[in-house]
Amino acid sequence: MTIRLGAIVDTVEKTKGLFKYYLNRDFDVSIADDRLIVEMPYELGFNQQVQYYKKLLAEKIIQFAGAEEVDYLEVHKRPEPVSEETAAGAEPESRHRNQRSAPVGLKRRRPSE
Image (tube, rainbow, N blue to C red):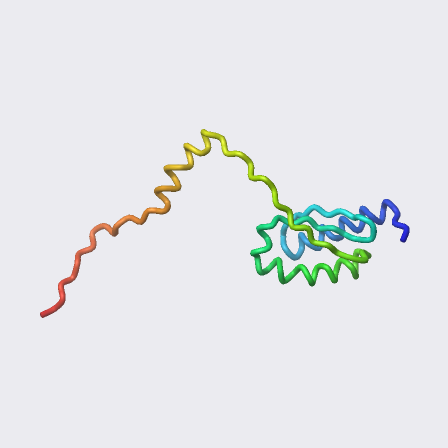
């Protein structure tokens, strides 16, 4: 199969457009041999909407973008290091958010006799 440079760019752009339309997200898309590769963060594996649309999007990519095969690549990346200033500033805030405050001004009712 011979692919022109314009066809590659067009296929990648069509694929990115489909993902943006259906999932409202941008993904890295590349072509290797006759396969179109879509890189997705591993966190999306837990998203039911993404799992539902993967099959639908693969069919549309094959139909409209001219790819022979669509591969989804789950990408695991090293987390970015957190600076000491950011960590120190975030600690008290998160602690307050998780604590429940007692209701103010509520009186306890006694059971009627």
